[in-house]
Length: 601
Image (cartoon, rainbow, N blue to C red; front, top):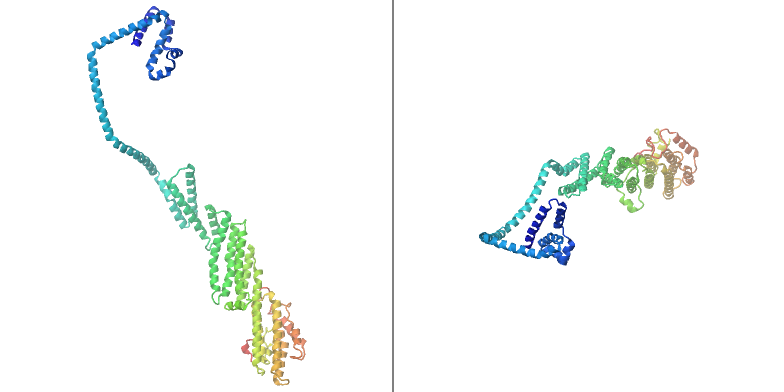
């Protein structure tokens, strides 16, 4: 009330001042400043430390104080002294007006009170009903909230499905990529497979760069990785087949584009899978060499395998990987050692009786050995271009086999000679006496050997030895053959001496035929053997005929006839159809010998 009365008084003062000084603009500005500005320091002095609390608790009081303090500070002392009385008068006036207002409008107040009471009751009823409705609708709110959350998820999913539908063709192509890759790999469409893999890589790399986790793309990535491995296996399996250089270049190029192997791993992969292709041919060779009578064929096939497939694989490797020959050298050495092991097992003569018994079923004659030798020479010459010349390692094996074969045949000839001497009745045969020898024989009197069956059988056996040597004549056998022929001749002389000491009486017809046999041995058989040796190995191979004949004097023959022996050697050297031996063997010459043993008496 005091505030309202003050406002009315202040308003009258202002109006009075305005009427008195209408033109006093400075006074109006001063009054406006005093009304709207209060001294904060004065407010603090009046209210003290309670000012912040009053501002929060009763801001209306502070506003009134701010508007009233300028009036107090601008009043004179007399005005301030009269201010309490003025305020009291104003208060009384306001109270009277309030009473008059209440008396005049009591019915309105009563009606307002009744309306207010009714409104309060209605509001209470409404509050009760609202609480009941809230309790009734509370489960519904939970359901609505759940529905809203699900609806929000469905909305997101609907938007995603709409996007998928808009990109249906592209999504379908992505999902079909693994199946398309599988079909291309199975149909050997490797170029198309690599293009699809490149497309998948770019797509998946872009997906990984965005950092998004998309289950479909993750599944496609796994399936593409499986198909990449299948493509690698399919390309590697092609290396196990019989393919040539253009196909190898194409397949290795595909493997490089797959980008699953380093260059060293690619070299090892190539050698490994091409070796598996070679193993199938090696298994066929192994089956042949374990079957009776097929050892020679197996060895020929083994040598031919090195000449063809091994050389092809080596050439392919050098064309594909020209920078590094390390794996090729190791692999080529293993293939050569495989052939060498076969030759050592089947061609090299065994050193023990047990080894001879185990190798007894694998007999190879000179003709088969010659064929195997020529195949080895061809294979070695072919592999020489790859640095795999190996003939020097196997030549000694063939020499040892032919030397053993020659020695065995000469031993068999001695046994036959001994058995023939034991049952010979010393009755000479004259069936072919006086017959002229056919052209090409290495001794003009060769048919004289048929006079005595033991000597004819020995000559036939020795000539058979040279026939075998002629088919596989290695120059390294020269010294060994001469030595074995000399030993065989000396052993034959010992057999003749044993016959002379046991069965013959001096001066008898049997003794005369015996000495005639010895003369034919010295004058015909020994020059014939020497002529065969020289015809096979050349003039450098000479049998010591003079030494052998000299050892027969005086017990077997009485004297030496050198003129006749030298003439036989000269006639043998003059024969045009016989050529000296070379490293690989001699050319086919006229058959040499005195005929089979069955033609002898």
